Length: 270
Image (cartoon, rainbow, N blue to C red):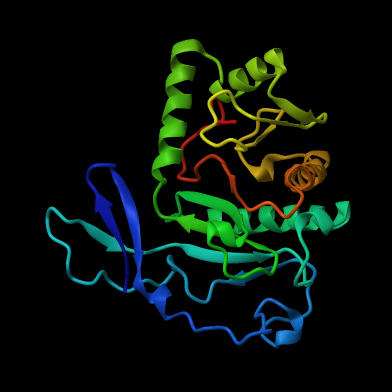
């Protein structure tokens, strides 16, 4: 059973996917993401459809437990795995500039492909690394979820940016970055294309932000130089955390792009 259930308090859809409990136990010393497994071909970077997706392009009808109050809808969407390297023990910090660029190009290609689906409203690129954040598959990989709705945090972020723009005529994201740069003390490092900083309001001690210096809405909007710099900046940020703690630091990396629901976010989403 997999379906979306409406939370009337948070005004958000919850993904319920009991089918993911059916994932088999992997044999010890066998990894489905290694080319030697026979499960994937030889590759450099690769998109792999999730074998046990929470969202799928051919969802079954909801389980029949919904009512007028307890609303449900099919789990439409797509869940993809992005394999970073064929090397089982690699990390972003081990990848060359050229390899990182190929990873960024793969993200862009999948983003473009998924946004063509008129039923998709948001495309979420993310990575979880480390057992401390619940990762069970150590092979270097991230994921992409294509949602049929706008997740609550992104909806709030977008609404706040729109409200700020309507009041001031300025982009909230650009203003935030400008003020962080003016104060300087929370800037970690920067290059001509990206700034890495710890926001004034961060909820986590090491909740680092990476923000484009140029006003862009989507990863696909980046110039050739910006795409190369994004890969280098991501690798440098992970390397900084690893060096600070002296081991491969567990993290959750989330990439916030504008929604793909057909509305124009160009003035106020960065």
